[in-house]
Amino acid sequence: MEKHEYPQLGETLYAQTLPNGLRLRVLPKPGFRTSYAAFATNYGGAHRRFTIDGQTLDTPAGVAHYLEHKMFDLPNGDNALNLLTANGADPNAFTSSGMTCYYFQSTHSFEENLRMLLHFVSTPYFTAETVQKEQGIIAQEIRMGEDNPGTALYYNLLRQLYAHHPIRDRVAGTVESIAQITHETLYACHKVFYAPSNMCLCVEGDVDPERILAIAQEELPRERAGIPSADFGEEEDLLPVSTYEKAAMPVSAPQFLIGAKLRPATAGEAALRQRLTAQLALRLLTGSSSPLYTRLYAEDILNRDYDYEVDFIAGTGTVIVGGESAQPETVLKELSAEIARVGTEGFDAERFERAKRASYGARLRGLEDFDNVCVSMAEGLFDGFCSLDAPLLLQSIRKGECEDFVRQALAPERLALSIIEPKKV
Image (cartoon, rainbow, N blue to C red; front, side, top):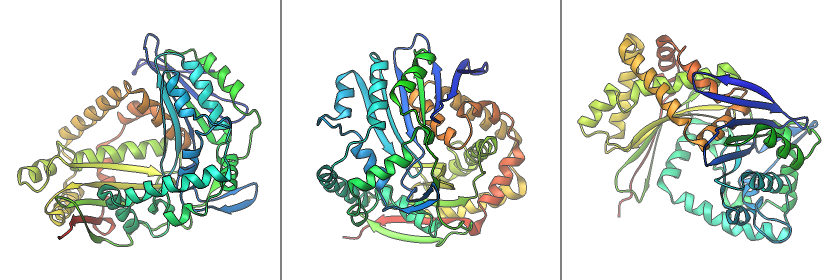
């Protein structure tokens, strides 16, 4: 395996792409009790239309999430989740708009659990009866999401920002869309997206990289399949569909999100640099130590229920800022004024250096969380970069890059405000 040294981080990464196309990354941590594995496919809720071997296929919303639910079923009637748990592992899975990930951590029997994980994820078993039975369970999950104010607010904002990109739709789909999913649909999508060539395996812990490589070679299919090409529709422009929307739900105080679309860098170091620049710029602009947040908190316009993030998923980039406030329109007004001020005056140089050091420190602390390291590494692999390069690359980001990001990405005409206010009784 290729050996990559990160002396600044005190880490050594082992990397290899198998003949079947699987991207394998192993980060040994000698002496640690817990080991962690993330087995991920570049397939999420937004991958509904795709081309493989010259054929374009359309699938209902919710297939990726539905597939995640059913992958734990085994032909003998057992459930892989229960078997892993009984063997001392703590397993689970998630589906986002851009990725599905199966993972576990354990303090013993790691290699045995890893074999089990690789086997059940690569060996589907569905029947018409079990797939139909699952529809009721997922339909209930969908309805619960519709009643959740945070989920509703998030997707309301995405529909304001995106005209047609499937990221605007819920990962789980709708009650109507999942009714179209059959066991044939699941088998077809598993064959296309769960091929090792479209997947990666990231492991961290007190493990032998060569043993992990051998297990992957023994448990996974050996043939190299084609990689599907996702079709997310025509390119979105950078202006929102709607700049202001308000809805009412049973909440105790108004909740809000402010968002903007970005044009994501293609892949590789440019994509990682864009992510780091955006995160640093948002920390400076509206983070918990920023002048804007400090002032609005002192004026009781914002409280501690406030945060920011920038998501790069399924060919999109989205800035999201929000939380709880009795005056969300005022927050947007003040944020816009701060954006304009930064556009003219720039960021304070000393505060920029402090924020960069704080971001660097946060990334170093994040290396202690094996789940964060493995999942972040998987996400990066699908976008052509290694997440362990982030701390060093962060040090090279200049103040002017962050200022340019604020001026361009957060221009007033690109911002959208979504609000959920208390429902009147």
